[in-house]
Length: 429
Image 1 (cartoon, rainbow, N blue to C red):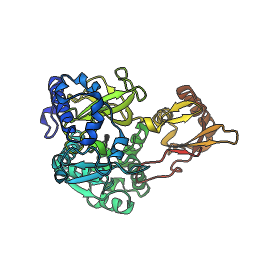
Image 2: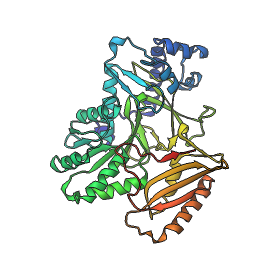
Image 3: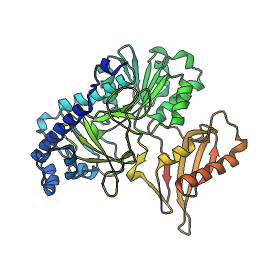
Image 4: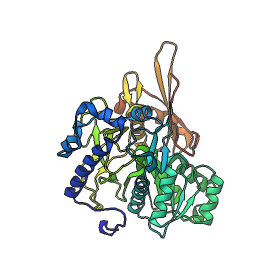
């Protein structure tokens, strides 16, 4: 599919993107002035909408983060009259109050639009059928997947997560061609399809995964078990409307993000200064169209990088890399900073290993920290070489991360499976 034939995806020139972003930045700052909470945040910098002369002026603005959302509970950073709100969504959150985000009708429509763009870039059309296995309710995922699927014109099966028996039934009876889920749920389903010998009885061709990293090794495993043509990773979060802010195309050179909806900066999480071009840092996002709760330099804490080359697919939308971890989920082990994505990268070098792993952190009676990595053997690998394999992985981790990590190799499918995100780090210190 050529870029010119897209229904939902614009193919702007670089100059058009820059113009849209500058206009959107001014409008966002102007809209923020409607919020007492935002006015308080912006007052120290003294910047007015008319002061924004170029995109470089974004650095004159302060950053905001999840604490600002929690402080403004129940409707933080609200920039519209309450009567203009048609819906709320909320993030799951692990501590304290949830982050509640309000949506106008246009905001809700933009959430659906960005998902339709993702599905279109993944090659889906109204001839496809989408089976949805993501969460519904306060979470954005279900509304986004279903709305985007319906806007694309697909027959949509809104099952939600869990209930493997029903998923297996509809895979066979309704013959969906696409499945939307977390990577963990997709792996669980793929193993169930294989266990029950159903591969020849289903019609799946594409998989859309989000909410957690789907490593290349996990991706290949799922493709093999389901006989897929391809899988695609989407990015997003509730604060950015929801999922669908970015997706990789069939070239898999990076995740195209919708630069007419967001400005993405990659900053050093400690200094909040831009990192060198192409290097990994924290994604900081400014929205360009959000009405109810616009974002001004919102710290996502997601770690990624800007892909510096143009994608060979021909679509002139910029790309960022995979989300490799979170700056606030960093493991500090014996004064070494470790991100789970670094561990996953090392595991990916060993064909004898599967993609599932779990890290356990403990502290002994001498207050010495210990880290143990348990990783599954690849499905067709036997147990005879476990000790040597564990030693090789441990050595590779030390060379890559500069930390001594105990490694244990276990049977395939021995680690817990989940319908949502896998819990890969267990800190018992």
